[in-house]
Image (cartoon, rainbow over all chains, first blue to last red; front, side):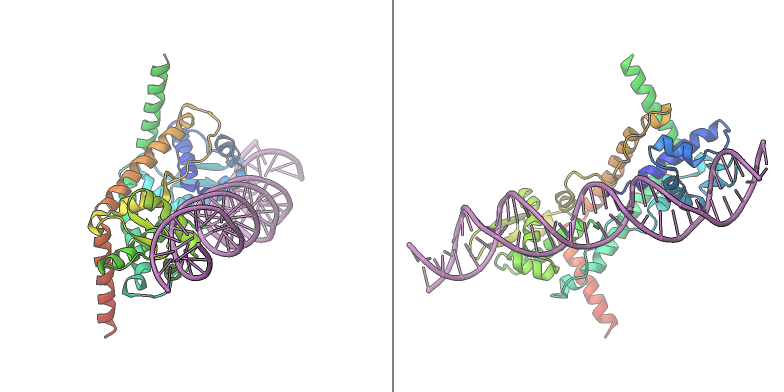
Length: 150
Length: 150
DNA sequence: GAAAATGTGACTCTGAAAGATACATTTTTC
DNA sequence: GAAAAATGTATCTTTCAGAGTCACATTTTC
C-alpha cells in the first residue's frame, strides 16, 4: 500500500485548524472520516499519536470529538510529520549483506547516517512552516483558482 | 514491502566505485548479487535506469558486466536517488476526498506542492555529495572502528 | 437509561516492491 | 563455429506494511 499517513494527518489538522478559527465544537471522527473519504475508526487511530503529542485535544463521550491542542501558529508541519510516521526512517536500509570488503562491511552504518542527515534537512524544511501558514497558503490557492476561472 | 531501492542502488554504485579505483574488469550481476545478498536478475533490473542515465556502463556478452559510467567524483547521490526511485514522489498523497469546503478542496494541490518543495531540499542535500565522497566516508568509518577495537 | 461519542483489539484486504525463473540475445574464447 | 558466460527482458509468485473493517467496552451528555 502507498503510505499516505503524513498526507492524511496533515489533512486532519487542516480541517481542525479551520474549525478552530470559528471556535466550533470538537469534530467527531465520523465527520472527519466523511470529509477525508475514509472511515471513523481509521481516523481515531490516526489521531492517537497527534493527541499524545498534544497537537490535538480529544474529548470523550457524547458531543465529544477532536480539536486543536494548541493554536495553529504554534504547530509546525515537522511535528505533524513526526506523529504521522513515528520512528520510521525516511528511507529503509537494505538488509545487511555479506561483509565482503571493507566498503560493504559498513555500508549499513553509512546509509543510516546519511538517511538521518537528510531527514534532518526534511524536518528543518517542515519546521519552518506552521499549520496556520498552511491554511493561509491553501486559501491563497483557492483564491487564485477562482480568479483564474472568473 | 519496504522500499529499499535507494539503499540498494547506492550499495551497487559503491561496489562499482571501489572496483573502478583498481581499474578492475566490469563486475557481473552474479558477483554484485552475491555481495548484496540478492539475485542477479534483480541486480540487472536495478541497473537499467542507472545505465540509461549514464551512471553505469554495461557490457554485454561473455566477460561483460557493469562499471562506472563516469568518474566517481562526478556522480552525485542525487542522481543515484533519481534513478533508483524514478518519478515516485517523496510522499504519497491521499486520494482526493470530498470537496467539502474551500480548504479541503485544494488540499491535494497544496500537498503536492509541499512534497515537491521538500523533495527539492532532499535532492539539494544529496546533490552536495558525490559517490567519491561516500567511498571516503565509508573508509573513514572503517578506520574508526578498527582503531576503536584495537 | 438511551444516545453518541472515543479508545482499542482483532481481523482481512491491497498493492508496490522483492524475489524467482526462464529464455532470447550478445560476445568471448577455445 | 560451437560452447560458455554474460546481459536484457518478460512473466510469475511472494512478501508485508499499511489501509480498511468490524466489534465492543468505556465514557459522557441529554
